Structure formats: C-alpha cells, structure tokens
Image 1 (cartoon, rainbow, N blue to C red):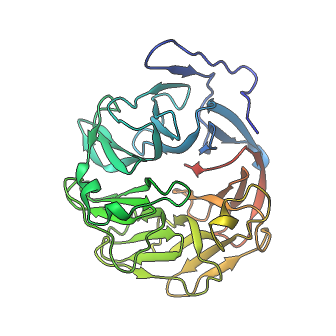
Image 2 (tube, rainbow, N blue to C red; image 1 turned 90 degrees about the vertical axis):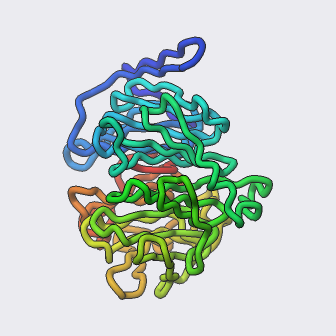
Length: 360
C-alpha cells in the first residue's frame, strides 16, 4: 500500500531535468534511520520511550537502495528500479535526479566510500541492471563506467531467474581502508573483485556463492569479507582472495540480509529461509530465521521476541556503529524490529511501512 506524506510535507515537481522534490525538515535527532521501501525513501526518527516517527522523503519513485555519506550524513543517494539515481545534500529535504551519463534507469545498488576521497568528496558507486558499475567523484555530476566488469569470463552466464535475459549488481561493498578494493555482488553471477579501483576485475572464486545478495567488509579488519547468498554464507579472511562456505548450524540456506559487528569481526548476523519462493512472498509465511555467529561456533537461531520461524522475511539488517549491541531488522512487509543486546532479545517497534528493502 502506498505511503503518504506527513502533515506539513510539501512536494514540488519542477518541469525538465533535474527534477527536485522538496519536503519540510526537522532537526536531526540522535537516532535517525533511512529506509528504501520499494516505493519511497522514508526517514525514521526515534522518539522517547522507543516510539518512532516516519517521514516520506522521496515518494513514488520505486526506491530500491539508499546510501548515506559516512563523512557527511546530510548527503544521501537513492537508487530506483525504473527512475534512475537521486541525490540529496540536505538530509532528504530536497532531491535531484543525477542519473546523467548512466545509460540504465534501474539502479538496485548504491554505495559511498569511506576511503576513496578526492578533493574532499567521498566517491559514489552505482550498480545497475543490466550489470554495470559506475563511479562519480563529483557528487554525481558525472559518472565513469567500469567496462572491465562486463568483460569477465563468467559474464555471459549471469542471469537473474525472474528476468533470465539480464542480471544486476545487487550489492557494492567497499573497503574501509583501501580505496582501490571493490566488491560487486551480481545477482545471479557471484562476487567479483577489483584491486585497482575498477580498472580490472577478478572473476568469482571457489568457495563463494553465485547468487550473491549482500557483501560486507569490516571497518576494523581489512582482510575480512562476508557474503550472504541464495545457497548459503561465505567468508574471506584475505580480502577476497579465497573464500570458505560457513553454514554449520543453519537449517535453511537462502540467505538475504547480513550485518557485522563493527568492533568484533567474528560476530555477525544473517537472515535466511528455505528458498526464493519463501523469501519473497507477499503473505506472512516466509518461515525466516535470523541467525547469529560468534567466532568458530555454529550459527545460532535467534528467537527471544521473534516468531520461530518468522512470518516476515528480514530484508535488511543493520548494526548501530556507535553501539554494536544495537541491531535493527527491517522486513519485506515493512516492520522494524530492534535488539538492544546483540540479538538476545528482540522487540517490534511501532514502525509499519509498505516494505523495507534497505536500511541505513
């Protein structure tokens, strides 16, 4: 169901390009989240006693992904399914279409680097359908293609089952320390790695999975890389040079969301169910589980405060960087769930959106 703007929200549509959307603002609180719902960008603001307010910032634009600049939280980018790429420089109050020279209107992934900085601006990466990757060093004013990604030997085999004639860059993972280290997760194709800023690429490696859904790097350990995929979970301890499947303890292996403790690289979380058919259902029968892994122990299913299995599939997992025990889960059906103790106990919030595709 569509969301509507809150009272006092104004949206302006200007003729021609770029198109700018304007929304009333408010002072930034201590805890602010941004959700891509599949239709909108929504700002979630935590209030006293655990309640949340929601404001629609970018409406009816088929939003699939959203990224916040780690150096400037007012700078946001949002990728859409059919409407290109949008940028905000004022915490989502106004938006500008910056698709520009990107030839594709489907942008399922967007990421902002914390290590690649040019003239004080953090580099932005946009992944598209069909599978291509673009970089901007000037706030999205111009974009440079990375054509070597499409020239990999496996590229002719990349195929997304619902649209088998195409594929897309489902996820972009960037090193926190090395500006030249880039990972692109192709759905369905695998994890591709570049060690020279995208000039050349290495094809998928044994031990990683081909149906790549989420890839994470670690802010404290530059050698750790994590993958969640349709088929299981994999980890690399040498910056993506080699991979090892890590599935012990899981009783379902279609894995979607992934989050890693920003302090402890041995503590991480995934959401999983039996298959794509269960994960992407519109009803409440996903039979999903959130798992936690600590060190060398098997995956542990979490259930205190959660249905076991969960009726709604968690599409997004997010760990609060300044408080690693605080974990957010956003579901396909739009529910926001939070744990304050590293996953031991979970509570539903009052947030109910039309969906949560991504959460930052």
